[in-house]
Amino acid sequence: MTDTDIFGKQVPVLIRNVSLNGKIQEIYLDGTGMIGAVGEKITDHDAEFIIDGDGATALPGMINMHTHSPMGLLRGYSDDMQLFEWLSTKIWPTEAHLTEDDIYWGAKLACLEMIRTGTTTFNDMYFKMEQIARAVDESGIRACLSYCMIDGGDHAKFESEARVMESTVKNIKNMNNPRVMPGVSPHAVYTVSKEGLTWCSEFAKKENIPLHVHLSETEQEVTDCVAAHGMRPPAWLDHCGVLSEQCIAAHCCWLDADDISLLAKRGVTAVHNPISNMKLAGNRALPYPEMKAAGVNVALGTDGASSNNDLDMFSEMKTAAILQKFFWNDPTVMPAADALKIASPNGANALGLNAGVIAPGHLADLVLVGRNPLNVPAFNTDSNAVYATSGLAVSTTICDGVILMHDGIIPGAEEIMEKAGSVAFDLVRRATAP
Ligand SMILES: O=c1[nH]cnc2c1ncn2[C@@H]1O[C@H](CO)[C@@H](O)[C@H]1O
Ligand SMILES: [Zn+2]
Image 1: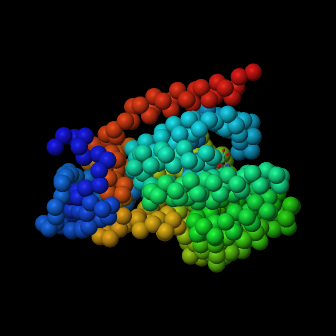
Image 2: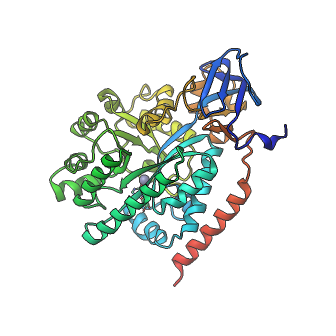
Image 3: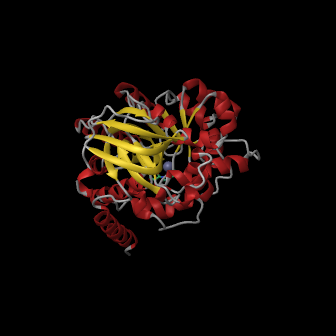
C-alpha cells in the first residue's frame, strides 16, 4: 500500500493505538461511512487499511455552525473597523464583484482549511451556493448550505431573492449527495423585510430543512429593531414565524432573560462566534450560563475568515471557553467538556446528523490530533484539546468514513492555495478599479 492509496475511498479501516475518552483504544470504520466498533482490542474486522495512531487523541470531527466559506478570499483584506462600516465600505462592495469561479475557489480554500484543522461539517450562509456545493462534493467534507436572502425591504428584490432561494434548494437536493444538505437563510432582521422573513420560515418548514440567520449580534441591531417594530430581534423573528427547532441563530450576544426563554421555548440553536465578536468589538458575549440553565442548544462557529481570520475550531473552542470566563467573571463557566460539546455534538444535533460522538452506529466523522508537545502530559485529553491544541496539530481527518487528510497530507492542497490566492487578488483588483 502506498501512502496515496488511503485517500478518498470508503473502505473498512481500523485505527489502532489512539487515546479516546482517556484510554488507548481502537476504532473500526465499517466501510459504509459509519463507525462499526470501538474497543480496547477489535479482532473481528476486515479492514483494508490499518492506521497506527501512535498515541494520537481521537475526537469527533468539529462542526462549524456558522460561517461564510468563500470569505477566506478576503482574509486580511480589511480588518480593524466597525462592523457596519466594514460591511458597507469594504465587504459588500467587493462581494458585488464575486464571480462563480471566485466563489468556487473560495469554498475550495475553506474546505481545505477546515479539513486541515479538523472540521468535518460546516453550516454555511452565502451566495451562488451551487459553486460551494461543488467544492464540498469534491473535497469530501459535509455541509449545510443556505443561500443568503437580503431584500432591504424592497418587494421586487424579495421576489427575485425568493426565486434564487427556491432554485438553490432544488439544485442542491438534485445532487443527491447526503453530505451536501440545503438550508434557507434570511441574513438578519436589519437586511430582510417582514415578508422575506415570513416567506423563509414557511419555505424552511415546507422543505423541512434548517433555517440559518444572524441574530442580536450588536446592540445597534437591538435598538434599531425595537425602534422599527416595537420588539427585540428574537420577538420580531418569532412574530415572523422564524423561531423553531429548525432555526440556527448566529451570534446571540445581546439577549435579555425574555429573549433567552423564548429561544429555549422554541428549541432554537444559538451559535457562539467568540472570535468574530471580539474582533468586531461587539462588547458582549453570548450569555452562555443563562442559556445553558434555560436548556438552549448552544453550538460553535467561526463566522467568515474575513472577521476571524481563520476557520480553526480548536482556537474557537479555546476562545469561547476563555471569553466566557472573562466576560462573566467566573472561571467555572464553560469548562473544557462544554467547549467540546458545543463544537461538535450540539451542532450535529441542530443539523439532525448522527455525528459528534465516536461510538458504533454513528457517522465516521472524526479526527486524530497527532502526538505533539502540546499533548504532553496527557492528564486530561479534553483539557489539552481545548486549552493547548491548535487545529494545525490535527494529523488525520476522516469524513463519512473517507480519509481526507493523513499525516497532515491532503492531496491537491497546493493547487487550491495557489488558485485561491490568485483569484482573491484579481477580485480585489476588479473591485477597486477606478
Ligand atoms: O459578522 C457579520 N455580520 C453580518 N453579516 C456578515 C458578517 N460577516 C459576514 N457577513 C455578511 O453576510 C453575508 C453572507 O451571507 C455576506 O454579505 C457577508 O459579507
Ligand atoms: Zn456571519
